[in-house]
Image (cartoon, rainbow, N blue to C red; front, side, top):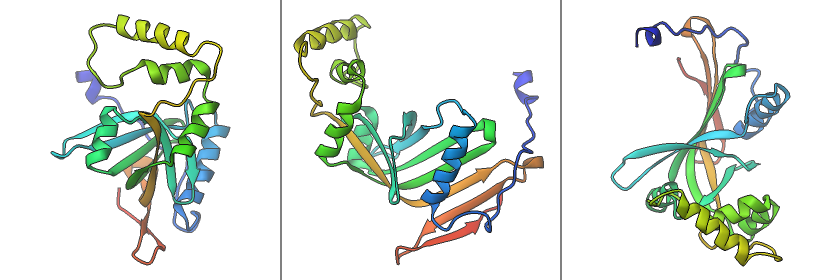
Length: 213
């Protein structure tokens, strides 16, 4: 634990200011995401999804962004999962991207809704066949006796769909987070980081401002 207290890193790669950020957070995010791709950041589309249940108990996990649109971001999962149950009772969520190679973090907050069924089916059809079978195989977030349950289920559904297309399970599909707040964080020296934020006002326009680190 003593070593833990001594871990330090100075952030000195870049700066961020209001003048050099775009007026719309998603357009700014596309620029940063493109730079993360160019820098070969490991899994640049990985993001932390934070949800909360009816008691207000938060939980978080890593998911992959699959859609970046003007209104927000989309991802896919099992609707019967822990996050799915959370979003059923509390459709508010937050997303966080962290790209340490670029000393950058992006946060989004907003309301979440399920994607139309045809959108989920279109995306599902593009997934690798193994992942399609996996969506049927796993009773995600349910307690199981052992991994043998998954192995047996995988054999069952592999056999069931042999020689035909794998259909999209009714319990699987997309969510879309409609953004009402965004923050772009650039690490700076002496922990005096840059934080440029965007907030959607009642007129549907974005207000941009800086926060202290």
